[in-house]
Length: 116
Image 1 (cartoon, rainbow, N blue to C red):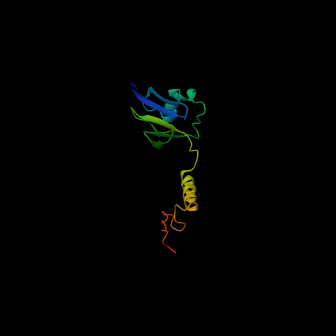
Image 2: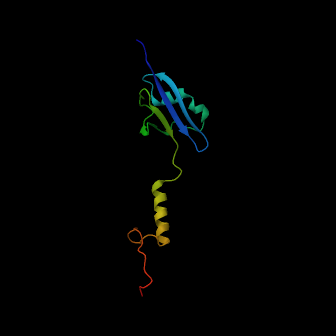
Image 3: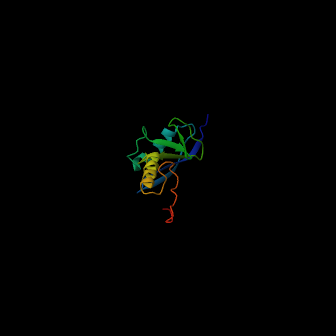
């Protein structure tokens, strides 16, 4: 029985440094094993696979999934801020500054100077 090999890429980046590593593994290896074989953990020792989210072509997957030939495995960094919280703060600031309606949250109506 002859085992076939597949070509994969592993991608990871920080604001200071990015890496895209192409390598060959035996078909049937898991995402986790492929990441370990790529050597990316040597370049980025801060990666903690047990807590990091991973994906294949921008779709999250499990470390136990099996990649296909030509797949790009991506290792994601955790978010610095919760997007929902940031949006809520921005809306509150707009209300305080009068740029948003305090009741509906929509754009505030501009009052004309002739209203008295």
